[in-house]
Image (cartoon, rainbow, N blue to C red; front, side, top):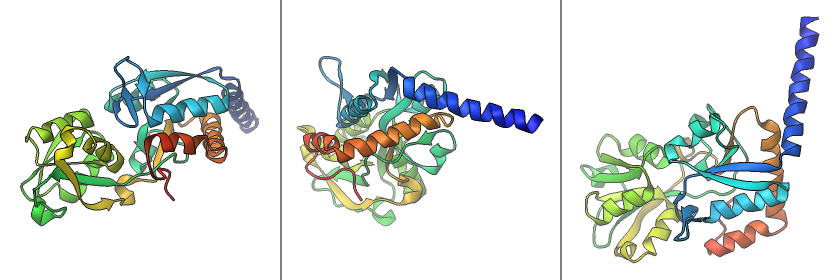
Length: 257
């Protein structure tokens, strides 16, 4: 009898999750707001960027209203688990470490990591050349994990709260190079100050650091909502909405293979 009751409760619980996802009228999306061109705050105080437009397109496809909540990068997962919002749409990589805490949708884009140096610098992307150098990274990111894992024994790693802070210290000469998502760095290099710098070395994509692409993070028990998100990602890819947003920000296919 106990087994039957438990099974009934389990089925009922799954039904509740499915219904709540289907009937949801407003979806609270968490983002950082300090990671251009993916998510940032413009002069009018509005959230803008690729993540924001993708999030809005997904909400439209799911026929729900979007409400955005900003959080420091390190606080995004704790805030999700504390139910301050329903999903993370903040260019978060799908990694095994993060999957221990939260669930992820299928990817909605993927990009490699790259190094940036000042023009005229001859440093190369290997241990011998980087030995003793100061590398700037945003804390709590796969970029930090990669630099620590591959170069931590020979470099001095300086961690920042945001990528913009790392870039500013780099331009001020307080770090020798920075490492980050390649698209974010390309956007920085297009800026007035960033024109003095350049990408160098290969594109890094090791799965143990960079995971399975960029996904939307959800609480593990929100499986019905996760499936709804996956269906919406497939839908905006199929109907051309994704491609229109992609073309607005990038001159290449951000989704990848």
